[in-house]
Image (cartoon, rainbow, N blue to C red):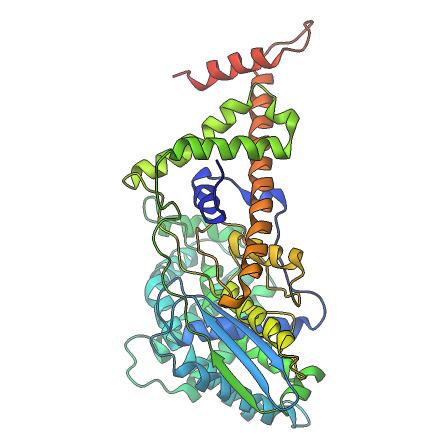
Length: 474
């Protein structure tokens, strides 16, 4: 009994496997035009901050250069509540870049205008961070100042505190009408002082005792450096845009009129991937057995194979039992896959209609976050099928989220089928590899428990007996 691609992705997360260790697909930026690629990532992140919808919002951005115009296409996981602000912000930044590109050099006043635009767009994000994560800063620094610190450590604490307090006073939740011009000047000054103080320290382990005192019971350890680094993210975006303006590729693009296209966000996924739980265990076990056999006949023949499959199945069953006999519902299609499918549709349409001016975008999609495992796999399968132009993203964190797959236009059903088949083949190989790793780990565990001094190597059956003994010890 086979499983669909979506069904396989639904059972993958409950397996609780570290997929990063397998060296799975993760398309990262290339060295060519790295500043431009980082700028696209930064723009995607800025658009998320300017259009708050949920904490899980993600944005993807592409840029297509035609003879008569430049098209920026934007996709979100969830449609922004203020979607009309998105084109407005993009055009504001684009117009600033166009003006700055013709200047002979850096202009302080002009740079200030850019940072004001970014601060205003980032206000909601800044305020959320101040409110949700900034409460520990004052007490932590107060405790640290009581300790015997070096002069460089004290300077770092002072600059971090001043940056936090200045932003709080100028842009905090209690400020009704922020003065973005003055905030821009103060922000840039404080960030430069903070970065200078930070660069003189080799490590920040000395902060850990004070951060530990700030952590609530069972709570994640707060990090002063991580907090301030994320708080000053608008400054990093500001720097990247300034650098991008100096790229010759950008200067050429800026001379062409810009059109902004915000794609419709995908509808929520239709519940669980398993429409029926009939023969659920039989189907899952059969799939796991086939995946292991296709990956390694030797591993499939091991006495540990049954135990490895049992282990994976019980993890899946535990999640289903906790969810009233169902696996968690699928998430909606993620934005980078929506963007890829959109450009594939355009590419296939241009070929079918012999359109003289193709709409192939720059081969890099800016994304506000690292992609999940499924999105990276979708890009990998698309590339393996050689269906159209190849694209890169900033990479993948290899974590599993059971999201749905995008569908191309109805006339391109074979394209969806090809990508789905390729994903299915790669998923089967990956799960087979995971099972083989589990089998190898069980073998090593049993070996460590057997005293083989002067005796012949134990058989698989002996390994299993030892493993069971260890597993069921109180």
